[in-house]
Image (cartoon, rainbow, N blue to C red; front, side, top):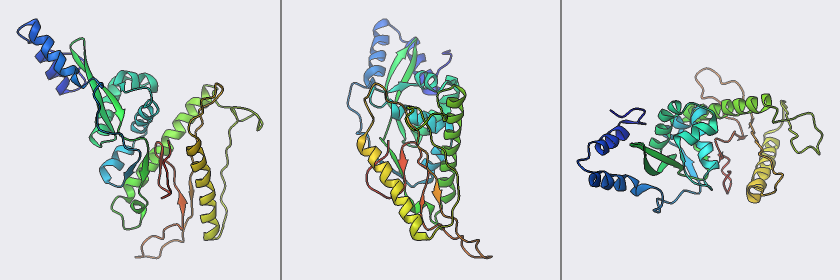
Length: 271
């Protein structure tokens, strides 16, 4: 019996290796299992994935799955990661991640980039299937069957940002006490205003322009560069609907990104 196998398929492959009639059979099986080690070119990674189906939205509606996806997307330039490496990056038990990894894989958000045998067990390495995600604007329309799922994905993103911020703040890695010249200075603002719909649209456009500028610049290679989190939630609240009427939709919104995603309908991608 194989212990600590990631799934039934791993156990079956490992058992086949153990039951090989000869060393030659074992070596042949190992070559087959290592054929997908990542050296061969796989399907092209999407520049951007447009999310509009319920299955993908449900996969995104969990802070831990978002964290897994974010780790893989951040490591895309250096290569695929194993479940053990993902767990180390998130400081989570490895066994806690398997179910979430499989759900992300089933939704097509990540994929197995290669496998190898480690102590008789097949170890998979994972990579993201896209560079960024875009939530389709139409899924937020009042009549959309995926509207609730879309908002659940957004709420999961909020929960994840909250958790990441708390961990970084408690570890002394963020500082709101410095002035504008401080490299680690942060900005926090929470307010509500009553504005005309056209002003909301203009504000939304101004914020989107900042995001486009950051994306065009790309990641800094400076030695003193710091990781920056930018989480934006802008929405207009419509009037309370009368009984039997469809809920009024806000005139415009810049909704929170989900792991490098955007749903503003504009060009380009976020990463």
